[in-house]
Length: 392
Image (cartoon, rainbow, N blue to C red; front, top):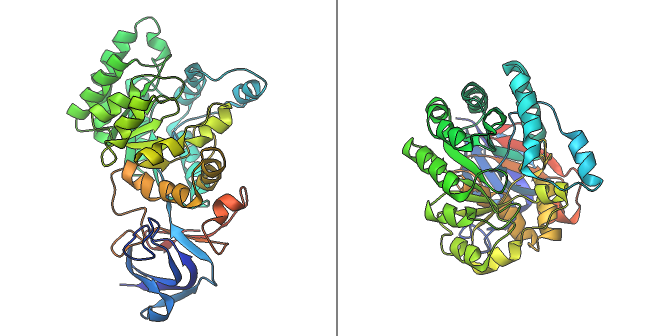
């Protein structure tokens, strides 16, 4: 066994109130962390740190858990620069633009798709992301959805079957036939490569009855539901997520009081995952994080990295947006981007720096995590450990 001690940490975020100052972040000042192989072995005051095989001096800088990006779409080809340019010139965003990426993805080789995925993963890692979820959804045929999931599963355990991203262009005149495909032959081919099942429940995509059928079929095949809910308009997505005990209702931009109450009554089962990169990139209305938090809902932050509506892999950027435009405090935003993401993935081994947790941690070139929102756009990630190994 090899041990590493990171000492002289100015401010350590553990996300365990019992370990630190009693706050949700579990802050410890003048701290140290000991890593043993892939796990956190010890945390506490620096002057009590046990000896280790290797020493790293944090020089008074902050250490936080690695970011948990619980919603992304990284198996794709091409980009949608022209669409973005047009949208910034006044055209509204709708679900239909996904078809452009579907065409490019279908035409790409497996090697090209994997290379693009790895490029984005490296980009995200350099910005502090140590766990990511990613989805299919840009193939929309049995073969293309299955290969997307195979490619993703080689690089993360958090893989989501999203054959129900939009109705395939091949079934434009037969949406019911496409739902039958998604819940039948496509599901059979894709389920062995995925942990989750997702559906875009929205005008222009799938209605509530279709979404229910898709998520129910996925659950019967052993996949855990999550759902794109209430992004572009009010709809049944959030209520359906809570009813089916989905792990996460994602976007949550247009909510009724009943939607907020439902999420607040299910904080241990259904997380409200907010994706501010999408609102930034589409000039849409911001989700009201303050309303959800004050009601008692569990909130996660994620990038929604995709080529159409949120082409960012930066969790620090999303934290800054959440603080500035969604009325979250810096503490709430960091918790949501780490422990909140872990909750959305139903994981207890990540998003925290308590003993026994996976040793995923980030050294910031700043004395406090508050700088992530205080200094937006500045590359503050100085080093990243992933499973106990220095990755950046």
